[in-house]
Length: 286
Length: 141
Image 1: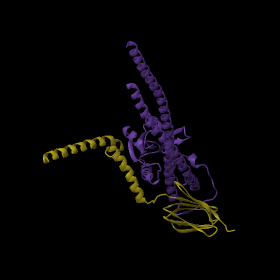
Image 2: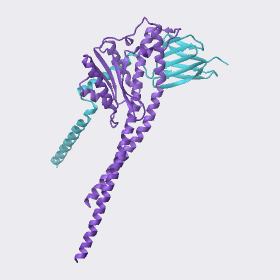
Image 3: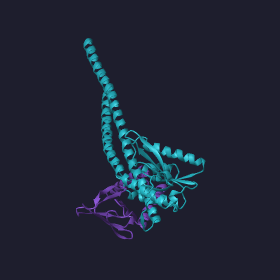
Image 4: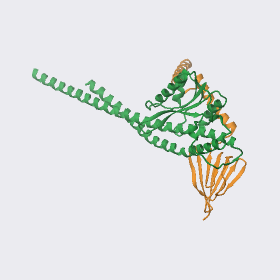
């Protein structure tokens, strides 16, 4: 009968684990919805600012901002966005793998990578990878704020302007749907010309104080908003991935419990049969 | 009916206001601006201050912006508001902090992932303290 008791406690422990994973699944589902809303809310700002930038770039073609110019690459900066916590499937690892792949390609052309990391997982990973980390921002929480990203953005953009890096990439997970998150590597700086080629107007603004300084501010704000959007999007991905992972864990726990329940029933039955046969044979002997 | 202009106040974190207005007042970098409908196209930076939107019925809406940009087109006024108080030195401080965090993590003293070993050391230290206390008590008797 000892076997039966052990199995029973094992079932109980799996059941309590299942309760936790089930709760995590539901929490992730509701958080995911809110992150998606935040992602939508950040769209108008970025769209508007991009429109104005395109207009400015065309209205004053003689002024070329360094963010719009390609130059030969010796060092490339990566801003890698990850989650702070684990238990979200292969989300972070898939993204890191994509970044590493790109770095390996670059290494053939002797381009050196430099990192800025957002999220604990990325800083741990790229520290172990022996990469040069210029800046990091961790523990942004479920509601990330732009303020927490200003410092990191400035470090990388300053590095670009000081020609310490010659391009800046943003690595994050793109939210396709609940089941699919696509690791994405996006070239932020220099801004691709096709991004700003969309609009052409015949009129021009009055600038106060002047077009150049406004363009500077706009470009900085644009890049900040891109990073913010990516952080929010990655947050939605994190919750979706966690939801799926926890659902799988809950399902696995159910199968395990079912199997153990069968084993338990058999053991219990065997014990009863044995007891009866002992009594019967005892009675026969008397 | 009074002439109106469409006003959008957006920040990177979301939409703040969207609606029609008879007049918009904003703290431009070169001075306070009053923008009536069909104002000529204008682009300027904003100073920290108050953006006021006067609706067609004379009602006023007040918004505090900590800076940003103002884009005016004859029928649309867009305020691209900053969410945070921005100044050159404040940005500098934030940048320094981000760098510092990276350096601290690389020197490996404050980093999150050393948490486990730190906890172990703490537990050991606590045990030692308890042992010392016990010894003291034994001697006191």
